[in-house]
Image (tube, helix red, strand yellow):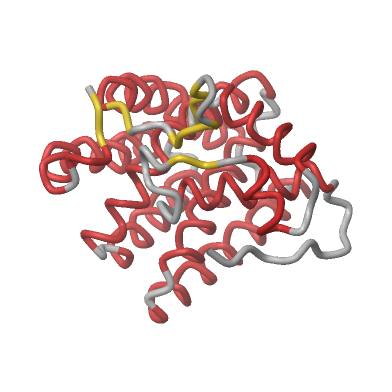
Length: 233
């Protein structure tokens, strides 16, 4: 597997290694159940074992990696129970956040003008990814869209909890995108949700967001049957 070289940026080496390994897990380049080793990954990425070990600790906290005594580490299987639990928590908290932003929305305020421009840019980039059938970019913009709205609440605790919930869901969401290839529908749902937020229609924003998140639950059973090697109860 090829990993990107470390670019010069504000990102620390430890953060870079963590992000690259996490991206490989979420995008299923590292398969659930696959064994991974600090020394091997360090060599592949051109770094020492230390930042890899630090990345493993963070990924263990997210339950994306499991340490096996005397055997290195294993990419965690996708837990159907955690997927179900995380979806419920995420739907509740994220719908609340989108509703709050809709209620707060004021086009006269500079911060909302900037948010509007930033979200519109993300939505256009997502449309471009749809046309290119670029699932990686599409997924990245999907994450960015949700995060921009969440950050507008100013509630750091809520953002932290939802990030944790999304860790369990992201592999499932990525697999769903690969299989269903319904990029255009998801992009259209994002646009409709944001239109409701801008229109200050909090009830509609909450309703559309809940429906958007429920789509994943509808495909969980079929995906777990098709890829049983990826899943555990």
